[in-house]
Amino acid sequence: MTSTEAADLDPQEATDGADSLAAAEAERSERQAPEEQDSAQRAPEQQEEVQLVRTVRYGRLLVAGAIVGAVIAGVVAMLLPVPDGATYELGQAVGVALIAGAIIGLALGGALALLLGLVAKRSRGAALAMHSDVG
Image (cartoon, rainbow, N blue to C red; front, side, top):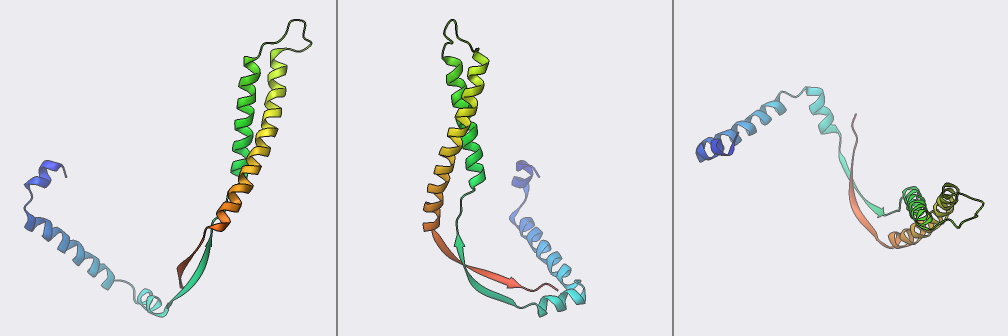
């Protein structure tokens, strides 16, 4: 329905549409199979208070740290000039820098993950969980 069609509807037609939707929902619940109604009546819901504990995804932080460290080290290695008469080429220097940067980034990502894990453990909460047996 476009906005011009919606503007052409009078309020009575909109109310009739909502009433017909509610009637269809009621009819559908009446046509529900008897065994489904019995199981819905038999399944009592139990409420239980549970503790919520926030946690850090360590693997993602480690991988992100390694990638960021490698990229930064690679860019820095490409920007530095290779001296004349050096026994290595720019590609070799960039490769070593990538590996070293990834290792340093991995270590920094792990340290960050541990710090965030300590902060996340402080923020605990409680919630109400609903248990129901489906059978």
